[in-house]
Amino acid sequence: MKKILYGGMVLSVLGCCLLLVMGLTYGGSGRLLPFGLQSRSGQESAAEHTAQAEQASRAVAAAADGNWGLSFQNEGSAPIGNATPEYLADFQAYYIGPGDPNEKKIYLTFDAGYENGVTEKLLDVLKEEEVPAAFFVVGNFIEENPQIIRRMEAEGHTVGNHTMHHPDMSSIADEAAFQKELAELEAAYQQATGKAMKKFYRPPQGKYSEENLKQANKLGYTTVFWSLAYVDWLQDQQPTREEALNLLNKRIHPQAIVLLHSTSKTNGEILKELIEGWKAQGYTFCSIEDLGTRKL
View 1 (spheres, rainbow, N blue to C red):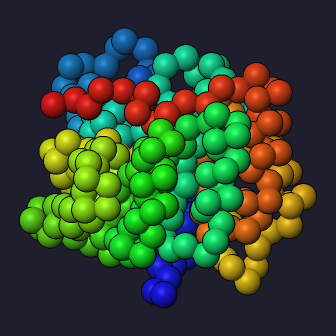
View 2: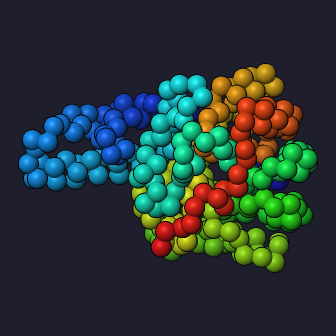
View 3: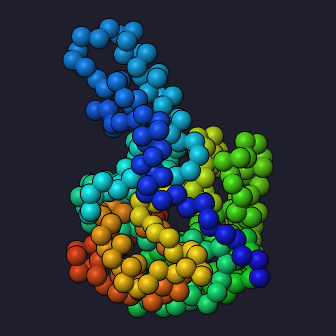
């Protein structure tokens, strides 16, 4: 069985470094601004405002090219991404849920690159706990496990597009080539289920560009990043139950989009306890289909 590696996951330290290297901070509008361009009192001329806006726009675009990264500032609070929610919203993309930032909602998602016996255990727990989830799958997963795909669909989960071959999509500038990666997976899903695939997309390894965001939006897709993940994809270096629960519980936050890997044996062991613990803290679980209506 061909296994697709997920070694490109960006950790929080890298996300923090990205922000520092790029020299970015938050302006009052919620956009990322270069240091030294924070708004001053209303004494600037219109020309200065225009120049600042253009420079800030270029800074945001630079931050939105490369790897998705996060910087965790405080336990229980949403991390800072290397692009703001406001910027991503222009392309119908999310890394945290929209709406009240204090509302205790969780969007649970899984990346599924191959099957090793864990996915159906996860589905059993989700069914027992009545929790909706999204599974971002690749081509070989659908081709080798159509029965699992059908079960996901039948039990009310969202099957999202993680591309046919799991390439670095940020290196694909050609619109036709970008569309081909998504369209081929749509066709595989259609063949397995007899239904059209819902338009939710996650860039493999979190690698993306602003052009990718535009292309996905043009194709009708909502792009879904994440605000909470951990190193769970290395088969020979699985975290212990205690390590996983400690990290995930420290970093859970309102409006979290959680990314777990369906290949992780640890996730199979902890999912029930994780869900029950988050419910006990007052969290509710939402479908990614609740993220919002796509902008045309």
